[in-house]
Each structure stands twice: as C-alpha cells, then as structure tokens.
Image (cartoon, rainbow, N blue to C red; front, side, top):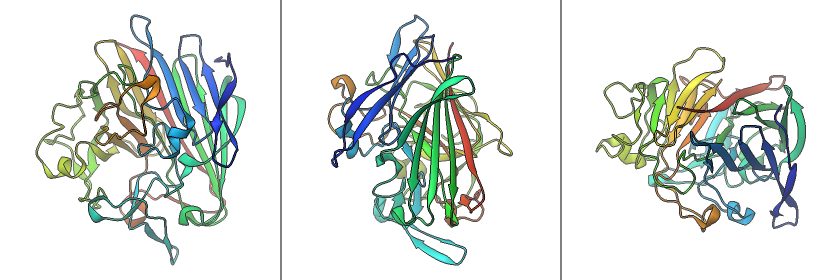
Length: 359
C-alpha cells in the first residue's frame, strides 16, 4: 500500500485569497508525486533510474503564481475539452454553442483546453482517500452551466493514485444535467533525464497507432484519418523520437514538430498500451496505458516559460514531451470521430496509467 509520509503543505494563495495546497504521495520504491489542488497540477514527479538516482522528471514551477498565466499548461488537468475546437463552436441537439476563443494559430480562432479559465486554473476540492488499497487524492470540481460557454452543470472528479509497482493512475469521472461535450486529459511534460536536463529528441518512442489525424495550418484536424506508414509519424517500431522531427513536410511545418493526435490501435474501452518512452542512458522507461481512443503527442516545440523553471532551471524548446490521452481534437465538429457527447444519466469514466520501469 502506498502511503503519504507528509500529507500536504501550503503552496500559496490565489488572487482572491483562497489557499492552494500541495499533496504528496510516496511509495516504498522512491517514487513520489506532488500534486496541487490548483488545476490538479502535477508539480513534481520523482522516479529512480537504474543506478538508484532519483530525479524529478516533469517540467513545472516552484511557485504557485507562475502557474496562473502559464502558456504551457505544465502538469495540469485539462477540461472541459482538452485540445482545440474550431471557431470555438459546435452544435448539439439543435443548439449552437459559442465557446470562449483563446487561441488564433495562423488566424484560425479556436477554443483551446476549455477556454480562458479551463480546469487548469480552477481550485479543486481535495480529499485524501483510500482507493483499491492505495492512498489516493480525489479532486472534485463543479463546472457550472455556461462556464467557458459549455452547456450543463458538470460535476467532475479526478483520482490520482500512486501504487507500489510504480504506476501513477489518473481516473476521470463526470456527470452532467444537460447534454454537453467533455474531453478530460493530463498535460504533464516529461523528460526522463530529469526536468531541465536537455532535449527529449534522443528519447526512444513507440506509439501504438497506425493512423493519425492531420491538421490544417491552424492545428485543427481536417477530419481525415491518415496512415502513418512511410511518414515521420510512424512510431510503430520504437526509435529515436527526433530522427525525423525536422523533416520538411507540411504537417510538421504547421506545428513546428509533433503536435498531433494519434488514433490508437484499440477497440472498445479496455485499458491498453498507448505509448512507450525510453531514456537509454539512465534506463528509465515510461509506458502510457489508457482507455481513451487517442493520444496527443506534443514534442514541446513551443515551450515558453513564465519565468524560471523549478530549481531555477531554464527550459528550452523540446525540453519535455506530452502524451495527452484523449478523444480526438475538434470531435464535436466531425461525425467520423468518436463522440465526446455526455448526456444526463450517463457516466463519463476514463482511465490513464503511467507505468515506470527500468531497462
């Protein structure tokens, strides 16, 4: 059973005076995760290497205030809708909903990660609980009807659990009182060398996907589902992440590297392997398992810090990678994508696990 040696500590105050806390989960193998109830952010994640050296492998800040205007969404819970919705607009059961526009890449307006104040900037209600014989952190947020332009009062719950076999589980649940759309994810940036310790381009990457969803110049999916074979998007055989990242093709040019959704090779909603990342020098391996149909692989092309990173480190372009398990971006506007609609009486539930091991 994983246990909390030091349950929590103060992590600063919001502008309105409310206090945020930092919750600490630790197991017997030296793994430790520190999570704040502000945005559900994973602030630190300590993982041992093959020599027993323990490093914090996620990017982030030492100070709460730096997260208030963080353009990277370091470590945050993302909602109501992770990724982009074109023009911030969708139709549902005969009604048209206009969401907040908070990004205009290449002149293409969209609602990104839930709008101006998404779940990443909410102070969640936190409760320390026992889940499947492990100590866990339960976070709850009531997203009121109209928040960000989304319909329905949505009650969201997220459970973080650190197990003794070095798995960090993230479980998402939600219910609504009106038809709405939902797409929750986790936006940690990983560098298996340790945060601030150089580029991730020499990490090895495997993605269990034969297809991806191409985007337009505004980084919005076109609706096409394209094969990865014979393209730089083929990670079906594990290889160096950055080997083709600067290839002069339209899709990589639009995004300045990888920032696309991969269509996972899975059927149904079982927990299956989505991706594997290996750092060969220190032996750290991370596997991502999920019930979701897609994963957004972002190679950190546009990292732009709000001041210095943790321990006064400087984070550079491609200094971290994201593997955001999700439904596809802009799904409400593409009938051929898996639905993200949630209706009253239905229960939204997805699970993603980060498995850490050594090679």
